[in-house]
Image (cartoon, rainbow, N blue to C red; front, side):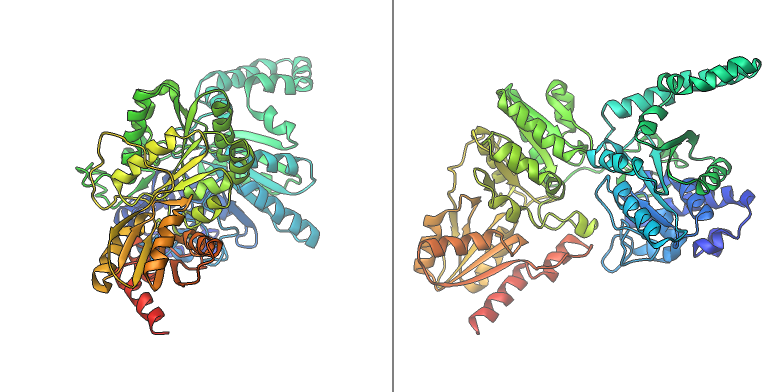
Length: 614
């Protein structure tokens, strides 16, 4: 079916091909990508855009001896296909299958594991220095793009690398996209220069005119830096100490290979600017690269067909609440670090564009930007994934909590997230949030409670966080009217005997199911901080076993808060903590992942019976 691709299992076989057949290989790879991802789901448009670049990199560089360090990692499907994992693509992002991102334990060709943005240059520089210290001929390439250049870490690494005489090649895959449309002055600058005709026309005109008069050409060469500063982005990167080359067409295999071969022989820090198109070769993805960024299974012929939604997701509940709250309070501003679609801010961005701020892939800036807004009377809501808030932990403490500013953190993707695996799991937020003074932490058990908690958080004059899981809830329709909850107050949802289940957030449903068989009491704790100490005292006084259940790592989480509460009240009772284990949990179906961790009805019952039998 794929005459060329079927003969290529590893880059060494790719390097045996003649250059003139590589465009055919690129065509087959695109067809395979669309066919494969349509069956499994995954990241599509970003991978379609890097087909030629990936081929050229493995064709020129002696991988895995030479290191390719990918940024973000969701554009590495072609890399995986060409490095022995083509057959494994049928289980892409499934339990026991190929990961959606580079992983060192999956292949020797994955030089560095990644799934968050803007790490490539730092890691590649470390590898380049290691090669230099070991006096080896290893070459190291960092491939960065999809908006990752907007993050400060990328510029920290550029600043460091440019000051070192180290053989490092940085490739900017400039596709004018991240997940949401990219923002920021740098992106606007590059786009305005490279998408118009001014740059190309000026270069052609300069070459034609100046080439006629040697003396003028010589003068132009001496003033080249000043001219380039007006016409190209090269000055920016050359000021960092890099030799800038480009921009070049990232879909022209001949030009890519020739340029990479030349750069391979140069010493010192090199910067290659490549312009690609996200979704290249598949019209539906070209027309809507955002829709096809991360896809579920679909028919390649028909494309993605929108389906009538069933139960609203927590993300939708948040998005609707944000618009409703913005209508009631002009001080509300919504902030996202490049996750407009994923965090549910599309409607808000359309209805309240003046109060919507996408700061790009810059989580640290997002939090401190919110702090600045709060200082001068605004009420910022930061919509952010649990896993991405980790990147702004210092700002959360230093800039928000210490100053006790009223910033609301709407934390999406809390708990296990499924196919994206351990890099995106929101397994740690209860642990890393509850140790911070001044912050209130809430865990809604259903969709309506999520809406009411968001309202509660917004009414506060101190930092607050509402953390909710990915996907749909239990099916409770949110009530339009909003009413603030009493801070730190839980509720008993079922009365039983001997055993009390203290459920936090998403774990209420399986706890209620387990309690029917155990005849146990169930408390919806609602707040992790401040904890309802009076409710804990009541449950401990009237039951012989307390069982805390949370979709967060057990270590330092909500269960630990209950133990601390009991200790402070000088109460000694039997406690069983159920949460996520002390491991990084691999990708898979979210429901099955919870089953495997014993956080479903059956697992909870089993754990309790084992505890009682001790």
